[in-house]
Length: 241
Image (tube, rainbow, N blue to C red; front, side):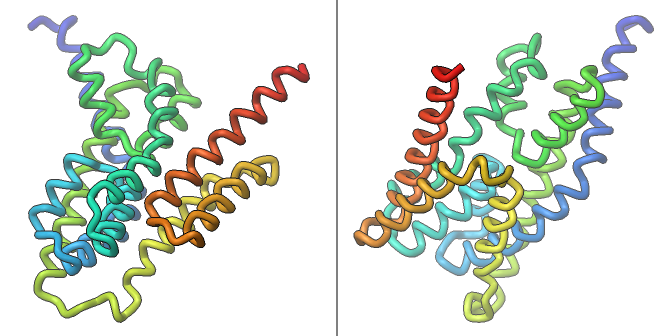
């Protein structure tokens, strides 16, 4: 391979390295509740190796947390899957937003990049891309590899520790999940212009829970109603214009 052929490969490797280093603070933050997830998951019956496989194959922290919590409380696999899928609906928009970033990649690389894309490295890549349109797939992949590696390592380490430690749920460690969701919700809030779909989703979730239906159904119902309200608002705005 001559110098002209080596240059693009070297540039791509440098961008991957830059992405991996840039994501470190965010990945470390996610690792904190990743360890808490591993600790509690193994204590409700998941084997430590199962936690690791789930993390590397699913790579969706919020969905993993909800799925494990649902399975632990109800033992219903379908309910756990539905709850996790509802939380992952946002990835439809995330994947759509990556069309320009992944343009030109072979299908296999596109699928790999999508799999290792999480909230953290997606947001970081979009932020860097806004500053420089040259930021693309190598940065996304480098940051994604670092993110998924640290997430899998932290959840597996938490599971290994949870297997030998006493029941930590009584110390309130489970609130780490609630705190993580509160933090994620707060980061998604963009002002009172969004109040109606949020209120609709919350109201539907509370109503379904009050009726005694499985909480997984409450999550799915709230998510779809919130999306429906957003769609209706946009249609009404388009008609008004």
